[in-house]
Image 1 (tube, rainbow, N blue to C red):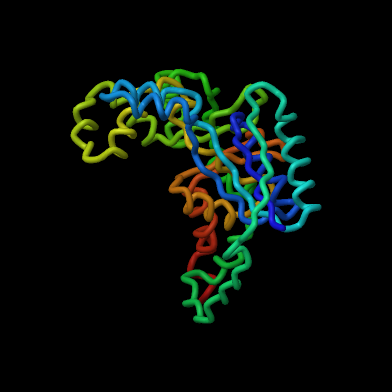
Image 2 (tube, rainbow, N blue to C red):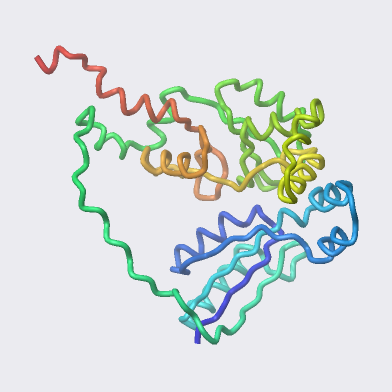
Length: 292
């Protein structure tokens, strides 16, 4: 019988390591949901006005994540639970979260046929060496501009985050770390500016409210005070990975840069799109004379 492993994770600093551990042992199809405590939701439903929304989205509960994974192998379930306990440090620890394993009586769609890759012929590359250079290491690419990452803690006020980013004007993504120095989230320049200008010209954001979802977003912005309030989930590239890996993660997450992390998810560098582009165009550095 299949089983549903559910984790309601309060300590988001553990999320990258947990996903890495589950991927390593072969846990299939993990779904991650943003969740809010039901008590606060009922409180909001019984209230009116944006003040209740602000209280709801200013709480720590909104930053919980619920992880869901349906597993058919009993041994893999036990292994997934053990890995989760190891990474989180035990679910009996305060502010760690909750783990449940529930029986699943019926499953549809767990085994899907893998789509066949398209057979279309790729167009010829503008530069023949580009296909090779995508396997360039991120360390080599990051050395092109040698950018110093902007690193702040989760409790850093937004105005201090702004000062930190101004000190590194070529780095448009701030890295938010926890007390242990591990990457906890990212704060894009656009998100930071929105959070700051919400308090300068709130009417600009108020005019965008047309439905409940917009109202909830408005309330969330009103409660933002620190880097942890405004950050998004962590995205990274590890030492030893390639230009291809870095571009894929930037592209999928709409980012212009990424932190480079070590095996413990501590930040050791930063790489951006300009450096990726420089790696590709360096194939032209020999000049046209070589082809003559």
